Image (cartoon, rainbow, N blue to C red; front, top):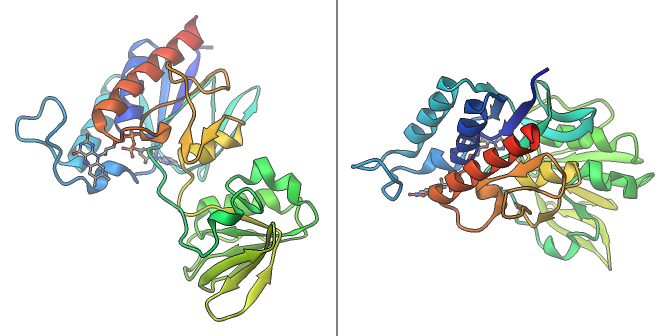
Length: 285
Ligand SMILES: Cc1cc2nc3c(=O)[nH]c(=O)nc-3n(C[C@H](O)[C@H](O)[C@H](O)COP(=O)(O)OP(=O)(O)OC[C@H]3O[C@@H](n4cnc5c(N)ncnc54)[C@H](O)[C@@H]3O)c2cc1C
């Protein structure tokens, strides 16, 4: 059977990667969920080829069409996990996608909560990856911060390990079905507290919740969140890559804003191209 690549992201990085992999005859699937940096870019004047500039949404839509025209499949779905089962398995809210190689091109993640003392407990009770760290909290009370599909996924991962899992929505209503066995608390959060490690969430109404672990799953899973799930090295919210866009996991590449550095289209297109080349080399030798 022919080898395939799944590209998570349909922005400039993901599309550039797809233009190379699809034209090299590799079965290419792009997964995107319509939430991206170009959405809010009214006019782009510093990218090659548009005499009067172009709007971000037009550039995005044109990119998707261009990738389709060279044979890439584009699916709209929200990726929540990445693992390995004979092949790489990309888990999304509407299905699973198996791949011989994966390119992470999710753009940058901007979801960090504004909660007092938050930074103090990152790594000391606050985690960004249930599948990576859930086991450390076996038999303990934990919470997940978020209200969408990604938060529900993280909460489900924790359920078999933890004594209890509470979904903290920080004033939002859950926007996805809450799995059985998960408690929900919609109160606004003021602070987190503890001595050396996280012990409590303090709500604006003065009430508190005793927990040992708090898993952050705001909005959608970012590139680093996805990379961590398969053990790829990350640096803050960026996926760590070498000069060929390879992560430390053979067959997993990353490109664009999700790798950090300069957040500009020209750079993401270059990195997308490189990641496409690297995936082709990985798959075809
Ligand atoms: C307001 C604004 C103005 C800008 N103006 C300029 C400018 O003038 N010039 C310039 O060069 N750059 C500009 N930029 C930066 C530029 O938009 C980014 O550098 C570029 O879009 C990054 O490309 P990317 O492919 O890495 O990520 P993005 O374009 O953000 O694309 C990310 C892709 O990943 C998908 N995705 C993310 N997470 C998931 C998930 N969990 N599941 C499924 N799909 C997912 C998204 O749907 C999207 O398809 C601007 C950015 C902003 C915010």
